[in-house]
Length: 121
Image (cartoon, rainbow, N blue to C red; front, side, top):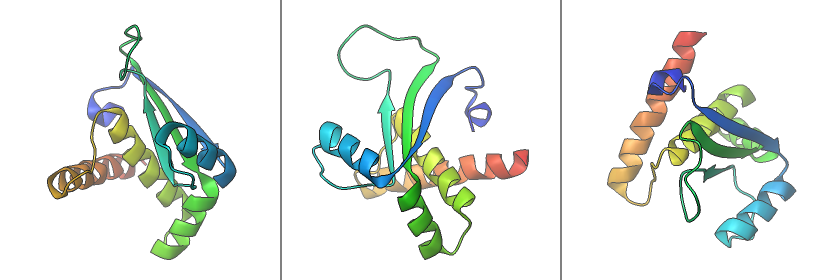
């Protein structure tokens, strides 16, 4: 995914966790007291000194939620986690889905990242 975005030297952290962990993070940082599928914490956002430009941030994925969603979408868990990673990565890069236009753009970019993963296999 990073290579397809010309970010082959960039770094990100990926945490695969349970619903309790992601719920605590969601409550603390987004003021939403519920589990979610993926959270993204960009390093180049907010106050403070500028970080290393190649350090993108953290993507947190709840495996129990991903497992439920994989079953709902009738696809293997690895495909769901890959989808969530792509979604989180795009959030680290500043993409959002707050309105229909942004959602269309983010969906298109997600599809591009998933295609890049498939091509690399």
